[in-house]
Amino acid sequence: MFVIDFSTMMVWPSDDLDADSCKKVQDTIDRLKLNDEGTCLKSRTNYVDLYCNRDINFAHLEREAPFIAYELRRQRIKTKIRDMWLTPG
Image (cartoon, rainbow, N blue to C red):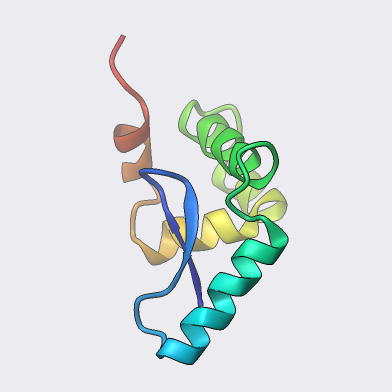
């Protein structure tokens, strides 16, 4: 029902939801402030950054941030995210 857009780290309703379910999911996202920069968004970004920099492994991510791990697996970008996330420099 919920998905992560890893390019922005925002949580959105899944595209395959009907209109009523989509509204309920969006209302939940808004009510829980899942895209608030100071809390949830920052936390998701931090976990992905730690994983991409190999400071934590996938098993750790599964334990501590299961939604992120689930989405990486579902989107089939578990290892590809590192190339998407890290910039040369």
